[in-house]
Image 1 (cartoon, rainbow, N blue to C red):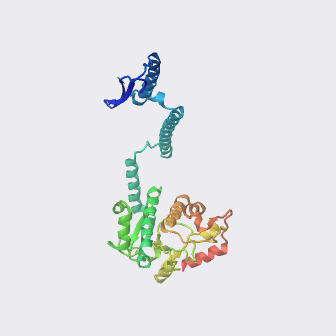
Image 2 (image 1 turned 90 degrees about the horizontal axis):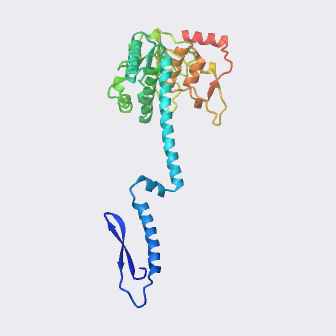
Image 3 (image 1 turned 60 degrees about the vertical axis):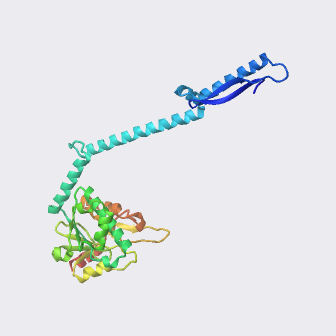
Amino acid sequence: MIGNTVIKEVMVTGEPYFAVEQAPCKQGKPKGNEDEVLLSGIFELLQIEVECESSGTQQHKESCYSKNVLRKKKHWENTVAAKKIKRKQKKQKKKENLSSQSGVWPLLTKRDLKVITKEKLLKARDSGPRICIDLSMTDHMNNKEISRLAAQIRRLYGTNRKSTNPFRIYLTSFIPGGPIHSECLRMNDGFTSYIMDMVEESYLDLFPQETIVYLTPDSDCVLEDIEPNKVYVFGGLVDESIQKKLTYTQAQENSVQTARLPIREYMVKKVNLKNYHSEILAVNQVFEVISTYYETRNWQAALQSGIPPGKGYVIRTSVAVSSSTASTSENKCMQ
C-alpha cells in the first residue's frame, strides 16, 4: 500500500496481473503528486519483471538469459553438430576402406557380406583345413568353467567367420542336452545356425588315426606347419585347478600323435612382477594362432596375434631353432 493506493496481485489466465484499488483516506492530507510518481516507477518495474517471466516469445526469453547460459548452450550445440559430422566422416571412411579392400567389388551391404561369409564357410566344408574341439572332458569341469568354454567356442567361431580362408570346425562328443550343449544354447545367440559340424561321436570314430594331431602344451613335438590332410584337435577344457597333462595323457592312451605350438622356439619369457609364464591357452586363442599362421605362413605374426601379453611371453628379436632340437622334435613326432 502506497498512500491510499493498494496494489494487489491476481492471476488472470495463468499470468500474474496487478490491480490497483483506492483505499479510504485516513487522517491527514493525501500526498498527491509524490505518490503518483512513486507508483509510476513501481508499475514500470513490475511490467518488466512480468514480461521476462511470462512472455512467450523467444526474443524475450533469450534477453532474460545470462550470457554464460547462452554461451554454454551454444557450446553444447556445436559439440553435438561436430559429433554428427565426425560419425558421418567415419562411416564414409569405412565404406572407402571396404571398397579399396574389395578391389573391383562394389560396396557391399551387411546382407551381401552375410551371404558371402556363409558361402565361404560352406566351401570350407568341402576343401578347407579341419579343426576339431574335443568336448569329452566336461566331467573334469565345474559349471563356471563350462560357461567359459561355451564363450570361447563363440569367439572361435567369430574368428573363423572373419577369416579369409576359414576352417571346417567339428564339435565332437557334443551330447544334446548335456552341460556344454545347454550352455552354448544359453550364452550364444544363433548357436543353432552356426556353420560347424556338431556330432555326438568321438574324434577317434570320425577320422583315421594317422590324420589326427592333438594339440597340447605338454607335447615334445613342435608344430611346424598346417597340413591340409591332417585334423588338428583342441582339448575342450577350461582348467582353473590346473590338472596337469590331462589332454596329453588321453592322447597318449589313444596312441594319437601330439604337437605343441612353437612358443618356446619363437618367443621368450618376459620379466614381470608375478614371474608368471604360461603356455596354456584358451581354445579360441589357439585357433587365432593357427588361423593367422595358415593365412600368413608366419609363426611370429601368428603367435603375436593369438597369445595375450598376460601369458608372459614376447616375440624373439632373432629366431633360431637349433638343428638338434628340430631333429629331436621330428623324431618324436614320427613315433
